[in-house]
Image (cartoon, rainbow, N blue to C red; front, side, top):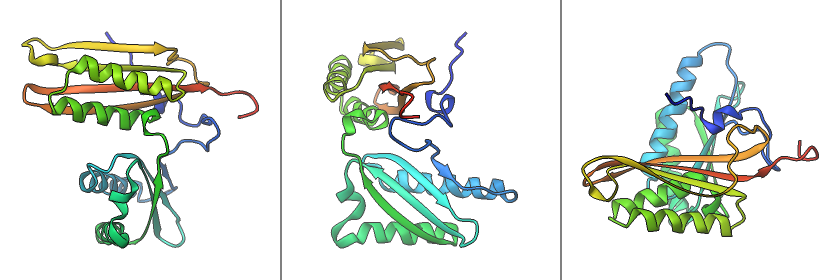
Length: 218
């Protein structure tokens, strides 16, 4: 029986390489917790649905208890799609979120400089190609090679489902370098995406190791 732990949840509270602590929602409440959590889920669901093709890597939500304002940081590989012509798209998104939450919302768009090193974006890219009937082995190996050439210490990609359209589902894994999932000091980025193919769903999992934290970085 598998004893698997989410690599990011396992490392919550551990400082990432050169970054702040990796909490995707930053707010505190001693009451109305369920309501605020539901608000976060609605915001994320709306953004991911509306900007499905914009290469969304991460959505950070910050809430200040006093002002009642919500700050949403969208990390994307394609900021032009999110912003739109003259900022029209991001303004429409902000209005949608304000209508959804009944609060003032500030939307910041951050560009992901190296999408080939972001596990979620790599998983989405592979899933898109599988939906376009690309060969799964070639697609996985190309993504793995791209991540390693961009400076990853190690990477692992796994696809599960009716690969190649065969009757029985199976899993295929390719990896290179080191991906120590039990080492808390390791900066492991994890991404998951499901590809909806004609033969059924194919799950794509990606692990990318960005290196080990040193004492100076902590």
